Length: 236
Image (cartoon, rainbow, N blue to C red):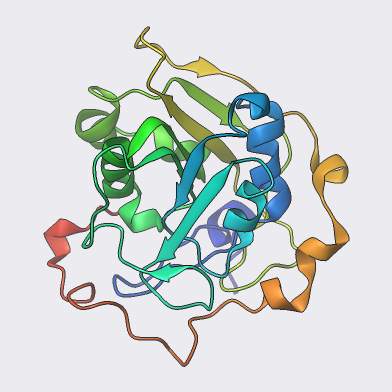
């Protein structure tokens, strides 16, 4: 007899340790950060870094709001600089904000590095379940709690290697925001209202953005990425 598999289980993202772990962010989900979570009027003259830019789905949206946006990725997708955020570090406070949807297995390390690079703040798109777990609390949240957790009231469908306007998902996502001007030590919760219809655009799904695997392969990662020891990776 075939066993029933819950959609909530099949929606989980489980990738090999050497996988690019590339799940493009629907552009409307990035617009939601600026329209409903951050103060968009306050970032027009600021700089921002997207260090896991892939084919540019998030970085192109950030350019609609920020004065200057840097983009990089450890793999070559034809957009941004080829640069491993963890192995080729940026200088401290090199950008005002760091905003990204990081590889799931490296999310904690990305956040620690982003907090060093982002002068004003960091915003990370992750599963809402990311704030659970004793280990993650001890490694990250105890000493570096976010200023705000903003869960989406709508689902944000993300598929491996491509955008699909008709995709569905059982996985819930949230923006985790570290604002360095926030000193209370207690994370606020702000629900992202239903906004997909308002923020989605037809040209978000044009072919130049929808083809999303490393250029030329299969692409080889930067040196040493595939040789990281297992204990160096944070499994989520």
